[in-house]
Image (tube, rainbow, N blue to C red; front, side):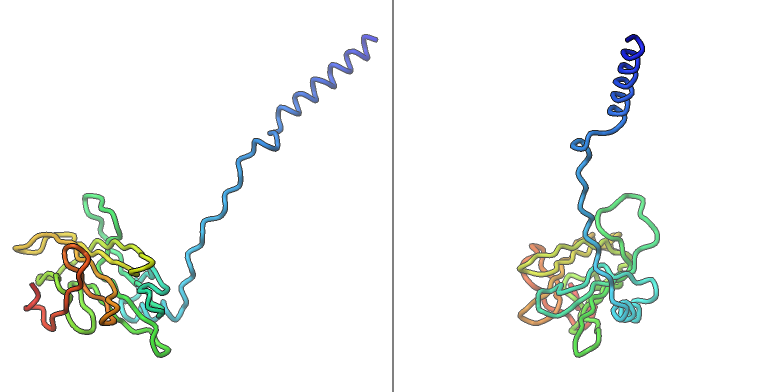
Length: 195
């Protein structure tokens, strides 16, 4: 009898130890759905962007960015040196928006030392060259892509001002916005006239 009690106690103890070492089925953390994958950049788009901005080009966004039914892509060259103060947004030296039209990708907006579209320099563009920009953007279902460009350093005899850029459906191109980021400004054909 002693032996059978001892065997029962050992069996009970080993069952309890094995039960404690396993996590109960209902206490496992729920599986998280995988993060949505960034859409793959088509090779022909990457090649077109590199033809415009060079080999270190990164496609930041692509799709119907303006909400005009055409495929567009925002390509950038990142700034390699980091400023001493951490800034929100993407730090760039250049950017371009390409649009797929007639079977080819063509450039419809450029940000390098200045902001311009095929009609000229955008209103609010500093006359002095800008060598680095902070880019922030937002996608609005009704208004499309809005871009905000801020020079990393103040231009000579000027101050740092953020320039908003958005697709203007009335004229069919990207234009700068006024300081309220609501009213479109026209282009200037030459840089000297930009104020």
